[in-house]
Length: 472
Image (tube, rainbow, N blue to C red; front, side):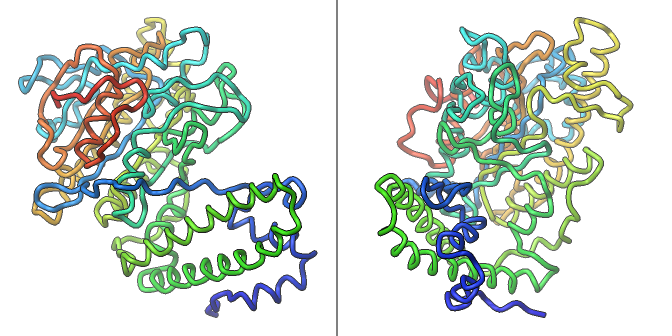
């Protein structure tokens, strides 16, 4: 049976079964994220939504008119250094053992040495390198050492770009994970779990929680149901959201008269969020029908970790191929992850193996884990390389894909000379096919360069950046 769109009249009728206006609004708040009002709405949360930057340069395209994309993929616990780094400099380089799966794509990538994250180092904060590595990776900022609600780090490079060019696509950015999702609690040595389980930060205190369930990602991108049903269900959902927003707007006018000053301020913030939701709906509608990825909806989170990685990589690729978004992050696992890898015969945890203390057996296992991640990354790049873009070049050519970790050597918890690969041609603006040592400069400098390629203007600094990298 088809469900009819929910109208304000229907909602008013439902309210007769509730416990009054405030209780009903609290119920609606489950989906609309009403603010926490001291006197009326305990337990609800206010939605966080950054407005689009004014005066943004809506470029994010190549010289041939194809979309220019960028993505950031995170691997945990650093790498086995001996197997990671290539031999030779410039175009005359040989890939190390870890990167051997990338050999067919060597001309489409740059291995970048000499990039550091000084704000991931201990300083006066003591232990907690895993939390800092994760939090600093895309922000370049130092995470405040706290396991309470006063988390603070910085705005990540992907969200800086999303605020400027995200309005060009149905989704300003896409955040994915193959790990747990945690936004609170104590994790690494007095640091909040929010630092280790989030890569993307909309503001210094608001992470963009990633989605680990492939089914939910697919339905968000392409709608629920099979084939032709997706567009119909999408339109129904849009109509339902509009009806809910219309009702909430009218009903909160009366509610405001009953609130104190503090609650009115919170409700005003919420209504600002409602208006931003409306703007996003209007922007989504302007793109017309949903794209059809010619793929079935995933069943959910696979039991095999390798399958989980592959399907999330596929969804990231689909989002680029359908121009659903041009900015994405994928956290394969939070730094400090102690996942075992029975698929490749390793029963010990990753973090345990990373502290190998030069034990030959453990070093061998770390090298195999690094290669396991690289195998799946290489499969993803191969797909992008085989997919033709609107300008006749490959999607990989028109992308900038960063793959790396905020830890360099997991055995010693170092944050200099980070393992970083920049894959793709940036639409012809990057000099791919090289091994380059950038000489010990902030990794945030690379982010300035990438944002510049995306057409982001007026951003002079990200984290601890000192200036764009001209060598890539």
